[in-house]
Amino acid sequence: MSGDTPDPSAKNGHWRRVWVRLGLGGGLPSGASSFSAAHTRLQQYLAFSKAVGQVMEHTDQESILLESLCTLAVECTPVSLAWVCRVEPDNSMQTLAEAGDTAYLDSFAERRSGLPADHGPLFRVWQTQRPLFNEPFSEGPLRKAWQQNARPYQLRSMAVLPIHRDHQPWALLVLYDRDKRGFPQDCQVVLEGIARRVSEALEDWVGILRERVEREHQLLLGTALQAAEEGVVLTDADRRILYVNASFSRMTGYTLAEISRFGLHHLQGPRTDPRTLTEIDEALCGQGFFNGRLLNYRRDGQTFWNHLSIIPIYQRTGAISHYVGIQRDVTAEWLVREQLEYEACHDRLTGLGNRRALMDQVAVTLPRVQRGHGALAICMIDLDHFKPINDLYGHEAGDHVLRVVGRRLHAALRRSDYVARLGGDEFVLLIEGFNHFEELELILVKIEVTVNEPIHLQSGAVVGVRLSMGLCLYPSDYAGDFETLLRYADQALYQSKANKRQRTRYWELFVMEEASGEAISKGSAIHTQIDRSDADESG
Image (cartoon, rainbow, N blue to C red; front, side, top):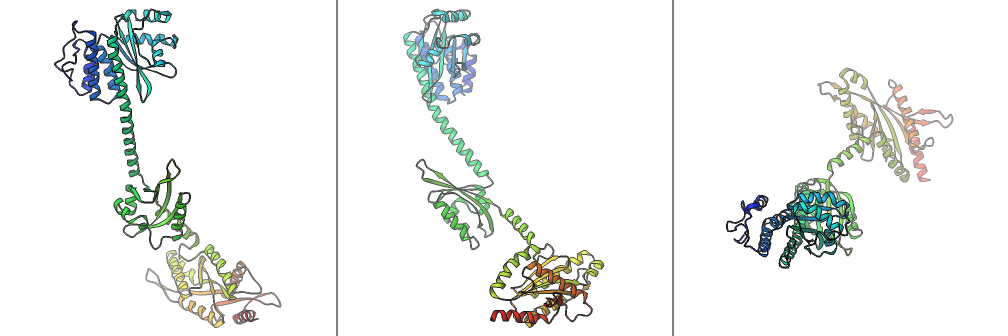
């Protein structure tokens, strides 16, 4: 500040605190001197105006400006009370800043609720947005009430000036003076200039505040996006990458510069489903939304399941200006889901299909056999000598034997055949694609030889098991559905185990004797079944 700025030594306590908040020292510059009677009222208001201008040069905070405005008015001019207030929608007045004889405001606040709002000078200025000066207190009953209330404070005149912000009425600057003509014409001009400059400063600060808030919001948004667990990608309407957050880089291994150079298609690989990529293109060319899952590749070549949501951003014209892609690594969830699906269809001990998987396989196999006019053998297997192993060596040894048998059965079959474990030591085989008994018998012999190999336990002991099997052929004249065929195979297995000491082979074939309708097991009957199928096919 220049040396013309006054130094109100007599009442500078409040102003000194404001000056310190502005970082301008403990008081006004040393060149200022106390006001004397020689100074005219106009010079005081000019000094007031200059001091307000210098405050505005050193701060852009609304509260400091208003506080300084009131304090400088009291310190620099004959004004006894300075007050900045705002009229609320309910006609109440909210104090924004004050200085001087503020006790009058307390008494005024107690009485104002009973006064007509449309007659008061404050409300008149608020409504008309025109300044008012030297309003007499003695005209009308309302003025007389105010005069009585102001008498202890010797307040005889007032000035009320509107202050604007954001091009709207915002507040009132109210000054009280002990002189009846405390605001002559030249001082009014200065005060109007001060109110106008304060309004202009507030207008500028609104823009600055908006820019600051916008920057803060952008910073906050950027921080939130960077901290988000999901990967975020922003592209323009032509799908050029503009932004990726840190989670995207951690998820994929690519930086913004790298993925911008390569393009998002670089995340795709040989195992990425092309149908999903087509769905994405069709969605973006249509409504713009996509929500789905696809297999992506990281920078190091590892795959991960990506749940991708693409959201378009529209301009006011309705055209798409940008796309936001939100990516979430759902590999762990997908693996858990696959594991659950696997366990639902597979035996946990051997890894073979369970009953549910067997029925799913039958739903595919039977129609295929029917279309090809082929033959299908349903085989029920039970292990002989398994219980003694379980009892002698324990359940862990029994589980090991079951796993070995499961692997051997799978290895002995052809790719077109199928093996499942129903539970315990029971297994089911589906053998198809044979034309003669000798061909099926070779498969059955291979199964027996493979399974009968010695099994080495972890304890070092060597054990062995044997097979008992019941077969039922499809197509047959006595059963058409799989459950019946499986039941008949189980009956043949029972006959095989019952004749264990007398049998010449480990399997028995279920047939229904046409004359009596009784079920019998005859190994030679397989020729009849296959020959009958061939005759039906040739006929």
